[in-house]
Image (cartoon, rainbow, N blue to C red):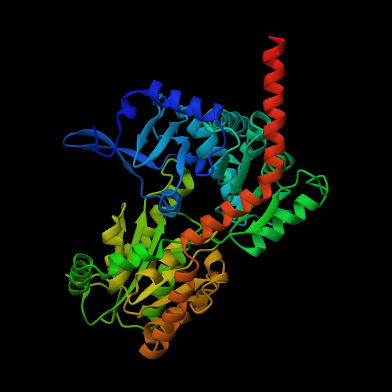
Length: 502
């Protein structure tokens, strides 16, 4: 057993008894049930055996640091198909796995979540496939998550539901546990009405969100899009059960990234990277999940344009593209990998020499220290999504630049652009403009770059992930306070009545 796991890992009954006790007891101010598609852990093989370790995913890296002060139960899929996993405790979090079969994953996750909602909510960059069987699976799995959360939540407690996979859960959980304060946070963009209207099940999704006390979104634009629907005909007009809808831009643990960037181990690793890539070269870096929304192919073509036009010499610059594997069971993602690898091959074939590549393309997961070292080595970070809810890579880079150097080229269509206004903003749909902006970044004077970076670091330091979580949970406590107490009393009265009648 991993040293970070408790004896509960092998004793589901013990955890279940603990959860039952919490559900029947009084409210705990520090308790929270997090509901997300995936648990914050993954199963890995070690020499000592198979163990749980904390996942490297974006939601996990953003949320876990904020949970240390609370008693947390996390409800989600363990990543194991057709296998029931008992509840277990890992790194201070009670994990309650929701079982999913291979068919469930294909229809609910790869199907409705990522081939219907994902493309539509990202501006229909790909045409969504509207299959009723996927919708039925999505609804069924949302019920399963709601039931698991209802069983895990303490009396009068709080539940924080995350993202587009679980948009029906707030209302489903409200039906089962009216005593709870329920929050929902959408990590991806919320589309305008004309796009959302394409969904045959749009009213059901909005009804799901109406079960929340607070709905959080990344940007004011997303907030306005949702408000227009909830206040209009789709949402049935203003309603006493309408949630509080507000903007809460997610962020990173600034001090963690800064502390790592100052460590001798990471600095040595970064220096070694620079030596291997060429100490005299400008290092451009892209760090993304391998997703068609990230604009990876657009930045590779822009770099190709600059080399062909002679605006940048092949001996002068090198582009490192770190692409993390993503949704490899979905056709569009497999195709995106082919496109990226083909473009990287074309660039190296046209401009590279033996022992000197102009593009280094890596397709794998990256450790934390390795990522910080990459950020420190990079003179320019290219964040060029066609649409993005926030994009934490931009904020990670800024937090890592303890030398107050480096240039951030940031898409106007990333949620982060609303806060990081001192970045070099760019329209990734404009090939010539994108290429010109990259050239500007390479040629930017050191003094101007440092001034921009200092301003960016102030923003990310002040608006870190703890402020994001504390603000959201504070709103949830305020919005759900009186109503939750009334609902809890009604639920307790109903249970007393049931017991008396029995």
